[in-house]
Length: 82
Image (cartoon, rainbow, N blue to C red; front, side):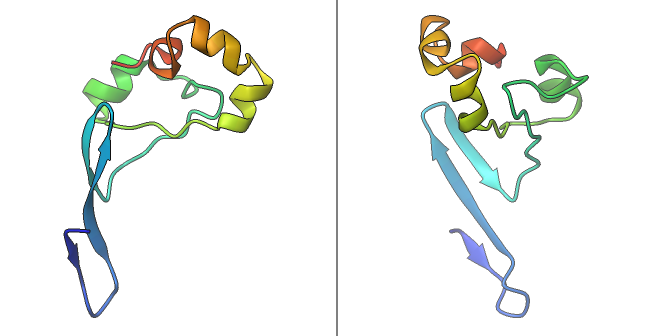
C-alpha cells in the first residue's frame, strides 16, 4: 500500500509479481479461459495498455488442464502474453 485517502478509503499500491511490478489501481481485463474475447494480446498491451489479465484457474484446470498449460511453458506462453 503506497497511499490511502482518509475520506474515501481509496488506495494506491504496488503489486509485485514474478514478471514485474504493477501499480494499482489498474485496468485488468478478464480472460476467464486464458483469452480476452475479440482482443489479441497485442491489442491489450499496446492499444489498451493492459499490464495484467485476470485468468480463472478453475476453468483452466478443467480445460485444457494444468498439465497441458505446464507442457506449453506456463500461463504466459499459453496465452501468448508478452
